[in-house]
Image (cartoon, rainbow, N blue to C red; front, top):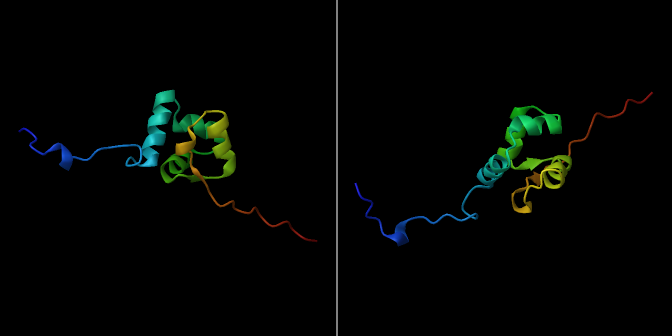
Length: 92
């Protein structure tokens, strides 16, 4: 069957219409890194890395690694997540 939809009715795709997590995945594939590789560098599980890439939020230290060591483009870097406080120090 031939598509008879006019050009004006077909969606055009730009980086603004493609979800950012797809752009992150494409970038990772292009430079040859995997969730497992990032997990080792971040000292996280591959599942947590997948969540960061898909969800688009992570602590600043991981953003710094992606930007500085892997040269991830600024426009696809994850957003900084709210930092969680550590355990409260025990008082005597």
